[in-house]
Image (cartoon, rainbow, N blue to C red):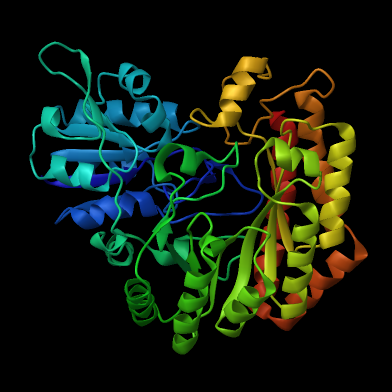
Length: 474
């Protein structure tokens, strides 16, 4: 079928390409590659991928693209679902004959209600959907495609087909980077902590950790870390380097690349032979020996989820991490010259005024280069969502974001209101960044590199605008 894969237009500043975990307006301009759309697009010959938010495209800019398509697949999420449904209905009005489907964690865990939301949607995919989409594009009737729920055209009834087995041999998936090259402008993708321009893709799927709030392993990726062969990954890195000579960094977007220490060490050695600069996600428990191998072979930065400085909260969310281990890991990274972007979450189960203060002090003590502070987000399909529902923690809202894309504090506790948790995010940022030592390190970074000077000044303006709009939205 003539197929279109679409990240639909959304709110200004939307950061939620299919490769991202959480969709919201960030502190600074950020766009992730739509990797989860590019993957099935790579399986369907002659397909087209449009990432409207990153390329600043409106419906009027792209509407003509749907006219001749037989299959149109949209990536959706809990925050963007309403807008994506509206886009599906606009598509249906222009092209009544097209098959329209939705992919993503939202529809994976709520297939029936997602289909019930609009008759414009013909099917939704559950769990991994790469070969599911290929089957549909190859013309296999919907009632014979494993891994979907669909609307029966004759009766209007919603039908749930058999589940599809997860992919075990990850090398059976084609590379996503040729799709990036064909359909995307790589200069449109930014990460506040990544060098620009960058390329990101996965070397594997799944995460063995059981963090109660984390969306992707509980809905699509699973807890079994399935990996591509090192030769396969290295070949795609070589392609990336040859295709985009201006790319300054490759980011491996696996949930936790460092979960398999022997593999990441072996991969690092091969990357070192290429002379490529690279970064990845990591848990704050990587042994120093592994860090040394990674750093010696091109590692620049680790994106690390610390979440909280309070040990009991880490236990509550099943993080599987001790703060003293995280402290040693961070010390090792500082000594080895590995940059850390640390992420923290306020409002997790067990949070109090005191634990928030503990986390702020902890962040200042371990001192990652940059940080991201989020509000606890109970996405459907996660254990945190189940907890919040059973315990009545929701603060009278079923929205994760404002209409403008700013994150809302959804959880409220008898001893700690959602308003107080919301306000503490700004305090966290200010107390972390407005320190003489942190200001000095950022200024020094800017003075050494004119491009970094321009970038940090832009990000500074965006950061203060973010805080202002955040307060207005509240």
